[in-house]
Length: 261
Image: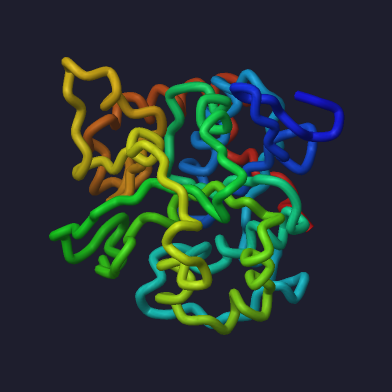
């Protein structure tokens, strides 16, 4: 990592905006364990410096950065606050937003290596239409174009078009505008291999194709921290991650730090 926050990958310089790769994880009190395990899994494998911040709705409200009323179809407290990521990153360099229900199995540097400055955002272009009516702990399942694209996003925070994502816009724009990236043209949305947002119950591993092995497991329907999903696919990996986290932190389930200003 260079001192000016630029990293050289295959001869191409990419601006990360700081000496550490900034990661913003959506936080919901109902999924406190999920947040802690997600953070732990990133740090466990990372070979580059990272800076992790939770996006906590209550803290954003105290700072008058978030005042939107919660809608009936919002399954988490960060359904909309996630789009503050470029603002929280100072509209500078690259940063990642990720839902808390992810488990990383490999080095985040491999994802950073995919960054291409020509895009405003980069994400997995899922074609996802779940049949379930509910998810998690009974939350309503909703269907819409580009579903789950916004659950893990690399933001080119300094891109001119992303400057629209101010607190005013995030608090007033429609869900369709935000979750479908309607402030961008299609060619400004870069694609990332699906293994970086591997949807449990939707994506599948081909044992004969290493390219299908998940690098980031997304328990989008619900993970083992919910009773109804304690036996879901890859539950064993998440439970191992929880055990590792608790062992490292003396059995504590709370590693929440002050969110980014």
